[in-house]
Length: 238
Ligand code: GLN
Image 1 (cartoon, rainbow, N blue to C red):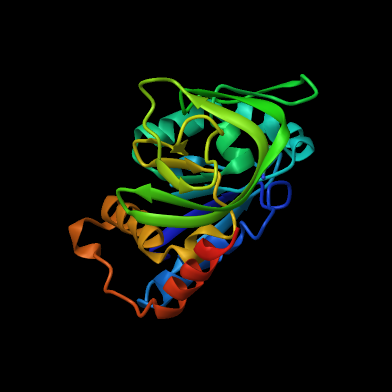
Image 2: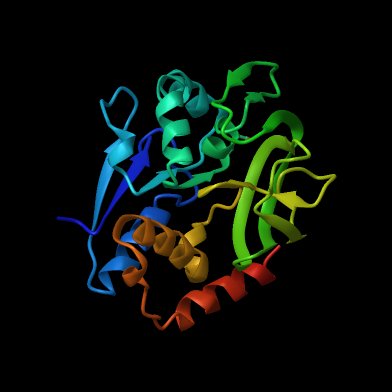
């Protein structure tokens, strides 16, 4: 039996800027500790019970891909809300993050409905927000790469993931980045995020392991010298 089950939402439709690297990083960081993950791809149309997953991952995608997955995500709306309420760990990036809000209004004026896990709306703008980002979070500074036209506005009560020290994050006027509700995380950071931010990867794994197996499942430290070096290089780039 696997130690953790990772559900990968829309692996073919929503995978840009190396986002699948996040799933690889989660799996490898478990393997390096003698633990095992089963990764279940969940493409559009799949009959899949999200309540069996410990971590659910969804990557970024162009507006067109978001349209392709939108109906399927609506179908899973209640199951996602139930899983979030039950403490399942979620990591949603850019295109999927936007669809975990209430809606994404594209720059062509097309409304793509979201599932409202995060209290936020996203409106497409003409100027894209592109570049490397550094975000200050309770789990350390996170380094990633953003490329989006959508400006995300969090409701006043919605917790962000952190505050940008470099780059745009949710929009170009406020300095918040991403969103967090229970164990569900959303962010604009691609690049991929978790290989360069091992502390955050372990935060997600730790939450999932504690939930599944109890407090005994703490993760022994790894040598993350290379990972930290990669983050420093990215943080220095425009
Ligand atoms: N299509 C969305 C936007 O441009 C998301 C892009 C992405 O996932 N990188 O805002």
